[in-house]
Amino acid sequence: MNKLLTITLLSSLATASADPASVERGKALYQQICMTCHGPHMEGGIGPALADSFWKHGDSPEAINRAITKGIAGTEMAAFEAIYSAEDRQALTDYILSKQEGIREVVRYVYPKDHFKDKRLAPELFKTIESTSSTPLPENWLYVKRNLEGVVRVTAKAYIQKPGSYRFDIRRVGRTAVYFEGKEVHYSDEKSPKTDDVNEKLQLEAGTYSFEIFHEEKRAHSYKFYGNLVGPAGARYVLSGRSLQGSIPRVIVAGPAAKIERKWIKDLPPRALLCLLPNKVIVAYNPVDGTIIDAWHEAEINQTPSLADRSATPSQIDGKQIPDSTRPTHEGTNIEFIAYEVAQANALIHSVVDGKPVTLCIAPEGDNSFTISTK
Ligand code: HEC
Image (tube, rainbow, N blue to C red):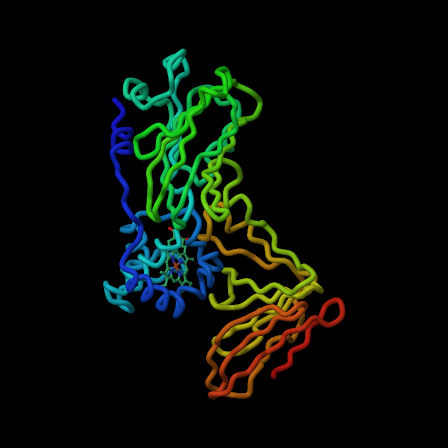
């Protein structure tokens, strides 16, 4: 008997929408402190992205709240218990959850093929057979396995933000059934005429929905399944393919415009801004006290060490140190960092120094140097 199956099928629509006031409050709190490590759009920096579907410490509301409350020992992620009230920590959780979109909580099971021969792929069939494997995955659920011998069942959740009409768009290879909230909404079998296909339109509100995909195809060198959940206004959630993790460039190199990154680098303070200029110079700037901490030329940011376990290991700067680059950039004593931006080749850092707005411009000079100026 497969217990998990029944749970997934019976779970009904649970809206992800929390109290809007709590989400607003969470947003304001997020911008106070979390943003410096997790990025203005939760895209990640020193801390991991919080808007993708890869969660190291659990993706449930409780798990997210726990990470915020208790912190994560041995990492830069502090416990916020003493800083924010329980209500504020809930507001932060609500805000993070409000940014969740796409396919989440994916688990892939594999079953022996024979059991399904000449039968329509449907949930009942899976109740009388044990899976040979079950694997929790990031959102790229099929890409990972080649030469797969068996019938695949994938359970997942769709976090929908845009209300409207959705449908599954699935390459017609082998046979595929999709059950959405327990009901068959898609069926295709390359051996049957196209006219037998089922492909229903789904009218969805913002919220979280459970779905299952059953799929079987001929054993081949590479898996051919490819599908999307397609919605209104360009909403498109990929069911297979590369994961967000896989598409993060491992090395961040200089480009025609400056880049400003926040990464956890050993011996640099967590809030350091790494300004990577087009001439391959990296300037590490500390926005808290307004000093240039260090600089390198012929440099790049290597994220490889931190990728496997996401962020438990620091990234590193590969390059040659520029001697004597440490220096203060502002005369004043009371420095409040506001924002950073890139203006073509230059990195601009906006602060308020002793009550006056100041913009620091870090610009490339020659092949291996930089200049600073303030406005
Ligand atoms: C000084 C940097 C820093 C700050 C500030 C910070 N975080 Fe984190 N956070 C991290 C790091 C690093 C991790 C990953 C720890 C690990 O490797 O397991 C993390 C992990 C998390 C996780 C778990 C992510 C997962 O994949 O399971 C959540 C949730 C989170 N942070 C939320 C927040 C919130 C909300 C705030 C603001 C109140 C905040 N963080 C502030 C650095 C930071």
